[in-house]
Image (cartoon, rainbow, N blue to C red; front, side, top):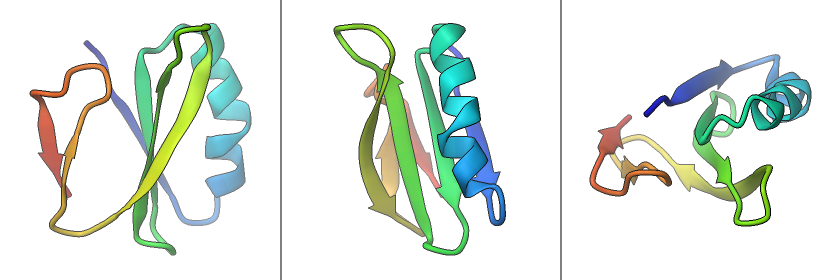
Length: 77
């Protein structure tokens, strides 16, 4: 069960664009983008139809964040 976390300051559009497409093609179950400027984490995971779908942007710090693909695994950022 893999999780990739991209940390974006000046690369947010690439992390949500080109990398999103690459991760969807690779059938990655889930990836997160930590947006440094907005202090949020955007979770993306596989949809029922296939491909990655965007989940909510979660405010950080000190908010535990559960994995989409394995809810019993929680990360505190």
